[in-house]
Image (cartoon, rainbow, N blue to C red; front, side, top):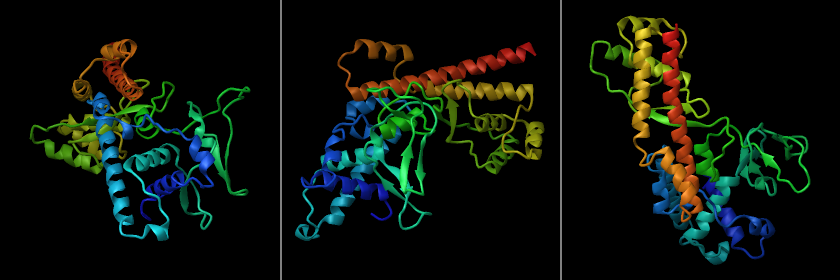
Length: 337
């Protein structure tokens, strides 16, 4: 338990929720009993994520939570319940507590040592919903309390929103159970791979990638959702994977990790590789963006979980389609030159 503070907190929340005389009962009773977290998805709801980079992360969370439940029961098994005074609990109880911690945990400085932090729940503040903006919460060492300020004026009866920090929609989905429309930090993480032909330059390319702690196979990169632009390090990877000996010599002399345009030929091949990877990624989805939009509009049988999952994959597809358009714009700019 000591090595898993989030598990310790979840177990504590679970036992407190099962204790009718708990000091924290008013707070715990006010917490939601249902979450739209992938942790709570059925097999059918999880299938809505097929093709999404978040699909396997969602499966990992379900598997990890089940393993933690088994670990917890084993650790407590054989210990006299009379001594520990622990109520019986089920996986449903445990999973709910994990959901509470997953959506509400925050790090604060430890009372024992300011250099160390502990996980905590902050009643009231943790009911604030997300809105894009700036971080307005900080820990005040003088009064030993977490302080939060509104991002703008709030009228009576209106919600108080807070900014959760720089998190893409995939992380908000996995750990908070929603997808934000107004998220300037959103990106899609795409796995890139390139099988080198075994040419004389392939070993040089491999070395150039290794120097930047990159690999030609199974390399994740970010695609910005707002613009569809690949990250600088992604473009570097693409340029190295398609460079010839002369261009490789230029990369070898470079003093920076990020590599800019090497030549017209290289840029064209790099962009062609980008387009190929993006199209293959889009091909993994079972539906088109248009079909998703129609289903959200017309299918009244969809659960709340399924709707969130579909909205996530729509965001991802839109970003990937923008990436293809971004590539086209670069070609137009090159022609104009």
